[in-house]
Length: 266
Image (cartoon, rainbow, N blue to C red; front, side, top):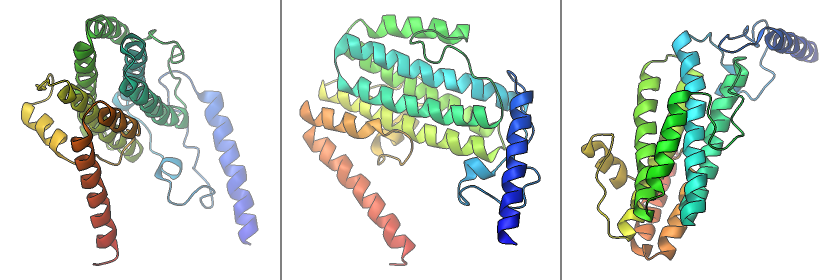
C-alpha cells in the first residue's frame, strides 16, 4: 500500500511539473506542482520544496527585482576585486552568487522567467539597476576606501530592501529566503566595515539609521547565506585585524554553544 501511494505521488508530481512548465511565462506563476499528491515525495523538512502558495503581483515583481539586485552586488564586487585585489570582494561575490541561486530557486519553483542577462557581468534587464551598477563601479574605482564604502552601501541597501519585501509578503518561501539573504547582508556589512576599520576609517551609516548599523556591527555574525564572511575575516586578520577577528570568532562560537546547550536543556 505504501509503495502504491508513493508511486501515485510521483505521477502526480510529474504531471504538475509538466503542466507548470507548459504554462510558464514571464511574470505568470504556474499551477501548484504539489496539488493532488498523496504524500510528500521530497525531504519532509524542506519548506522550499513542500510549501506552495500562489504569488501576488508584488511578490512576483519582488523576486524578479531581488535576483538582479543580488546580481548587482556580485557584479560590482567582481569588478572592484579586479580594481583593488582585495579578497574580501572575491569572497563576498561568491556569496552573492549563492544569494542569486536562492532567489532563482523560487523563480523556478513558481514557474517565472528570470532575466536572461544573469550570466553577463555588468548587464542588467532593469534599467534602474543598470544605471546604479555603472554609478557604483565608477564611485568604487576612486580608491580602496571608496571601494569598501561602496560595498557597505550595497549591503545597507540590500538590508533596507529586504526588510520591505519581507513585510510585504505572507509567503513562507519568500520570507525564509529573504530572511537568510538579510542575515548574509549583515555579515557582509560587518566584513566591509571591518576592512575600513583596519585602515583606520570610522564608518558612518549611508542608508540605514546609524543606530541600526551600530547594532548590526556589534552583534555576532548571523547564520545566513553570507558564507564569504569567513574568508573576509581571514583577510582582515592578515591585514592586522587579528584581535577583532578572534573576538568575533569567539562571540560566534559562544552563541552557537549557547544554542546547543539550550536544546539539551542545560
